[in-house]
Length: 117
Image (cartoon, rainbow, N blue to C red; front, side):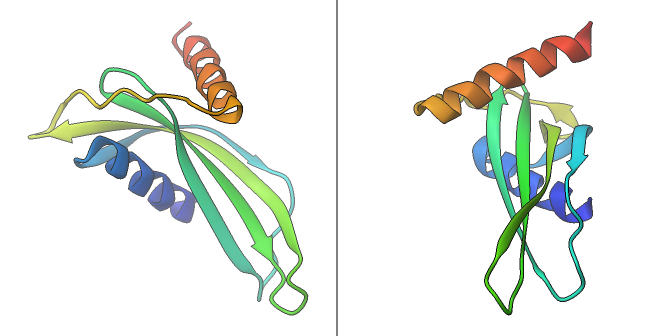
């Protein structure tokens, strides 16, 4: 979980170009274990940006270092807020360009709507 939070935080800070804090961990889905001796690969992306918050998706893959086999093990959604002087500040808009980015963008809005209801 710590690695997921750090990876997501880097993506949020990169998009916002300012410090960001974790507001919530919205969902974590553990699909397969990661075994001792395997490499762990994390990839984060900003799925959607609102006024001062962003949804970050993180995908976790395990790699067997002997065989090179990779397994999709976990994914998570986190919300980060950009801050300056302890107060939320606006973040840049996010433009979804590819079909996959557009799907992530729309799914993030659905998750957001479910959280605030």
